[in-house]
Length: 240
Image 1 (tube, helix red, strand yellow):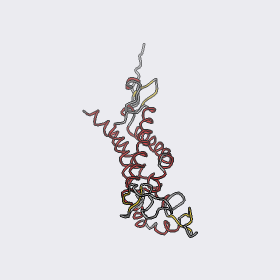
Image 2 (cartoon, rainbow, N blue to C red):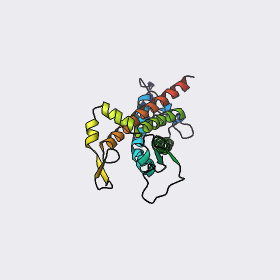
Image 3 (cartoon, helix red, strand yellow):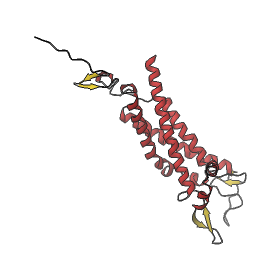
Image 4 (tube, helix red, strand yellow):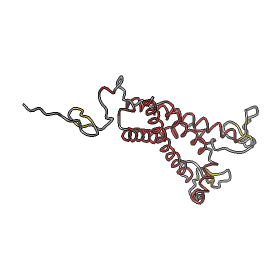
């Protein structure tokens, strides 16, 4: 009787009778139900992780940038100047009539701005990092902590600089967006004499749109960086 041999397909092996690409996932490559980063071909694994990070960070961004941001921090994080203010941002000497605030702690407007911005970024980064860890746990990825911290760090540091407003205004001017910023302002309240007071920052303004666009673009860069570091770390571990 003539026997036939089943040849392994070029470039892969048979898994359940179906040709698999080199590096494809096999049952024996799992460990405690968790998929190692090396269980899949590098391009597919990179696209999957980058897409997951992008989707998660983009979806969580409004939640932690708006809902979880303290109202006082939102108002005061852009404060700048050497004049003294109270902790709520009210300038010393600008108290309401009959409001005795003697003895309350004061600080420069610049210091209040940095404190407010750092506090906001800290809560934002904690929420984003928590969401990311939950994501990779649910999907079964084992991403190095160093890669996650680097991605979160990129988002945090740039978020802090952008939310200080002055760097964002400088960048907008250099990019030729000065007219856009000056044109798209909002009036949220009237001055004491009833005159309209235009504000160039906050929801509804051009500066707010530029702020959000920059946060999301940097988030994409951070996601790609996180993925690259994760794959690089995994390849380095396999070669040792």
